[in-house]
Length: 497
Image (cartoon, rainbow, N blue to C red):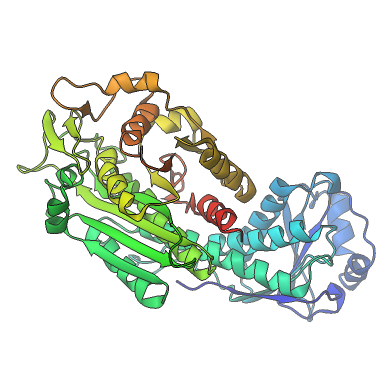
């Protein structure tokens, strides 16, 4: 999977540069002064003419491509909106517009002239980081199972001149951070987009081992079904009973902090395909159930980003991987299983399987005595009813952790919204035949699912991200890479980085 490289350059007069593609951000109604007037004169008034004709409005996220000359072959105008409204949201839209247009250009190199933007150093660094991430996002094209991939981006290099308030060293650091996050996002997307006959629990284990071999600070171990049985993980193992694919518990330990410092932990639901089991799903859109490992793939992407950012933090990434299939061996509605915690679970619906793999993983993570634990899962369709595809659901037993995730989502523009896990909802999980049942009474489905998980997380600070609406989309169909930006920002803040 090819991707462009990034370099930071000192401020230079764009009118004197030579480049296959020059990217110029402009505010709405901005006067053509300085280098803009000089460039416009070189182009025989093309920029001014485009503004007067209404071809380029300068509205946030708008764009217009102009033919250049022998020295500057293409000019891409990007709208910043009104200068007084150029906030974080507008800057993200600018970065997205840059990514979209550069991914479709035939130019192999581009220069992005940001030095004219009136931004403080912190905002400038954030813009450069976002810019690199969004360009990498836009340049990602799935090609793994295509004999003749189409629309492959040609962009190989992008140089950026930062606003004058940002020193060149900080500009380079910001771009490198954006690349690390973008690569983590695209790794997550790639795992999610792969078909389930390739991306099996065993494949995920191989990916983890390959990641571990690349990085000295990352160690990987994989627990097979025999080891999980010895540990009493009857809940996790029950999900894979109907499949020929063996379940795996994948553990990635990144040691970037002090040796005896307690780690932060990420736990991902890794259902590589979900038929619903005996509680079979309807056939329509069942192919999208290859995306049911979106939580697991985000753990992979976040761990990779944390390693590449060299965060001064200890981190444990755990993936509970299984395939949920119907067969003569499959778990049946009404079966009772015993979790690693010793609590028994009556399985009333085998399609509520994500919580069954997560609860044992959440018990397993206790041995690391973590500072905080965040699990990530495409857990319920109900969260889409509540929040749509805009925000991930955040559930937590600790207010500070919930606030940290909300703030990280706001800073990264990968937002979440806090949902309740009040004790009043727990009664929906009461069972006559076990300590609990795996589904509620039919209302507040995402809440009762989180309440189920809460029963296994009482020994540490914990949050649950329900990403069923944000980790993948149906149109256009594909993995989004969320919530990697939120998780990376959360870890950076916790690391003081």
